[in-house]
Length: 153
Image 1 (tube, rainbow, N blue to C red):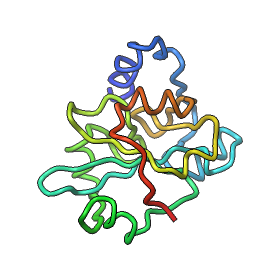
Image 2 (tube, one colour):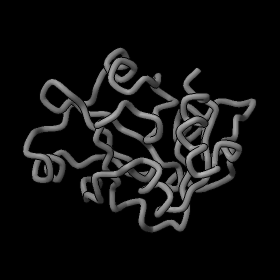
Image 3 (cartoon, rainbow, N blue to C red):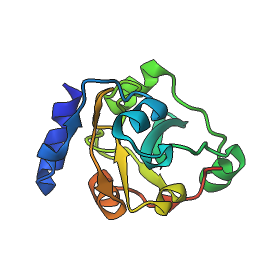
Image 4 (cartoon, rainbow, N blue to C red):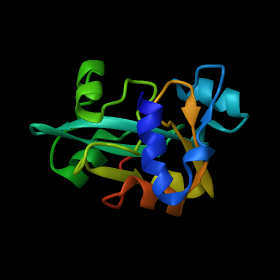
């Protein structure tokens, strides 16, 4: 199970027990924000993009979208989101539960500057009803982030 994979990853920091699984779906930003009673921006949305023969993940604030021009300027190619089958193949997570933790080795993760407006955010944890509250420093560390980028609008 994908949540177990994330818990195993987070156990390195003794945070595995902090993963919350709700009775309701948190598969979309709107559903997650409603379930947690937080503003949509605090939902850390993990977006997967094709990068040549591989892929990369960008975590953005839930109320933001990726700006194609900024993305191309940052990465040198136009953004193309993965389809649901590709997301599962590359990340090991189904759409609605994709998270920046427990990804295959060497899978690049970037954090968007839009997250910096919050002290803590809620990324998914491998399923469409799981999440964890983390500080930005924790998000950066637990995800093995390649760094901060500014690709949202």
